[in-house]
Length: 323
Image (cartoon, rainbow, N blue to C red):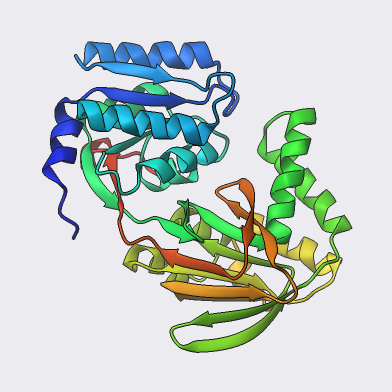
């Protein structure tokens, strides 16, 4: 069990909240959400400040600014948004010694749900006031943090296409499903990967490699329970699809939606602490981390971060049952 630094404990109990707010996450009204959150924190007698991106400021820059403020004023950094926003803020918080809070605002909210945090902004704000500081595992790929998953190949392409569909048709699980089907119809590429872990090496041909750090997402997809639970034991879970045709890929998509992906014979899954992945003939490759796409130099190194996030989680009586 990781000891909680006194700085983090004191900040969580008494410090101000610096809330990185992404008003574009999910389908809620940003103004109403801010009012709800602000009312709860004000009633709780705590200082708070909403931080939003200025004209030339990226989310990463805003997150670093929030961390600087929290360290200077012994406060808490809070991410209000979807999994992508939470990822960007957590990436700045990790290793800073600051406690970290989340106010889930997105479509899927796997990180918040896996940590029993309510999707209701008012109830989630109450967790900031009366929660416990708990160490939570983070994954990394080439130094970039991920809390839910990281992937290469077909899955990043699905995510890119999904964002384009959302801009045109709106944010919903149904739109995400349709865009995924459209991507599968156009996909033909296979990756040739050399993977190394714990002194063992192997070659792998696959359209996509998915690395999970979220038990809820892995369990919902039907990945073998042993691999899903390995996340709770300080490991990451990898899922690779064997080379198959488009029709079989559709079948895997449906199995994932039905929570039966682990039963498929075309799926290979395994757990690890550190995995080196070298794509043949590629010096750079697109990598998705919690829904955000970036180009990275190869080889890729997936690993458990040495330090945990110091997350504010609900007291046992306030934990929300995962739906």
